[in-house]
Image 1: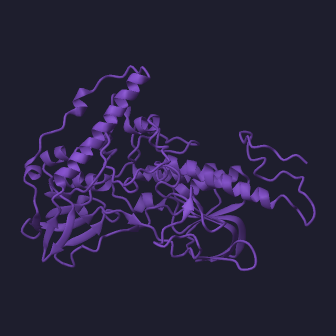
Image 2: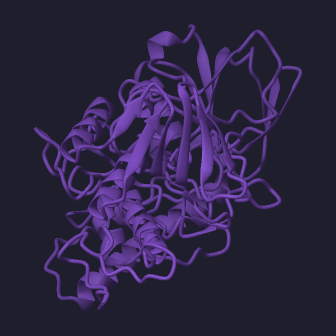
Image 3: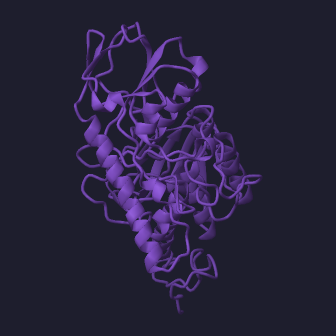
Length: 440
């Protein structure tokens, strides 16, 4: 494969598909490359029972609904992947699957970039890195080097049957960790769950899903990150029809809660003495959202059913009243450690001046410090909701608008000494584009 294109989009997950739709609306020639299949991570890097954490009316793109799923239902992972494949067909996304981008370098003495792939070289004027935030599973350095224990990341967990017999330690209590811990507990496993700092929104309150509440309260579109909010773990689930995660309830159901995991020495796990503080902070976050929702309902005269029982916090279970400081894994019967510790980004293939001193993307709303390079699908790219399905669609529009604007500048002069009198593709992109038109 040896070709050229105006804009090359790397990745055909939700970010890449959204990017293609908006580029097409602007008439920007482009190509989308995907090393696997469309939305492959939803199919093969998730556990079997996973469903979307937001309801179907919310966690989707504007141009297509989920077939055969109630708007208030939670979509299984396979159907999420099917959805993006259907979306790509509907909007005729120019995607080539099975092609891996191995290197991107700036051209010298001419604009654009040389893109090396597993199937040849592409010359592109612009490159959009749409590989998202969940690229490489992270297992921290404290993981014990002990062959007695099976260790895997949630990206490799599928179901309880895949694990050896015995108890399980789950490290990390965000959406992934809590859902996996609850599933293992229901399967009859003894589970220890290591809980760090987290936010804990209600699944629903006063008849409205928390996604709706965060929307009307302006939280999803909040563009200002409060200090410490960059990587807050959120404990929420759409599993089993959706329910509010309450760690004390999980403990009363049989899961042993422990504090943040600090180290492993000779088969003994040591935990921080922060379990109660983490639970209390999560409860405070939960109650604050209920307060904000009540205030919004009263201010706007919403006739919603009251829900005083939502404010009832269960009593502390014994594992919270008397928290474990350490645990001999073998004596506790633990045979498996599951790491629910997130992902890192891998941009080694992108050899451009678009990263800060720590190797993180340097950008403003996805527009990088390297002209012609863009990032999409990252948390807080432009707002709190940026890394969610619907949020990435809106961020893709911002980037496509920027690309169209840059193309307008370059198209002003068709040839040396002459002013273009022909509208560019972005000028005629859509009747909803209200920008001033060029007058010749």
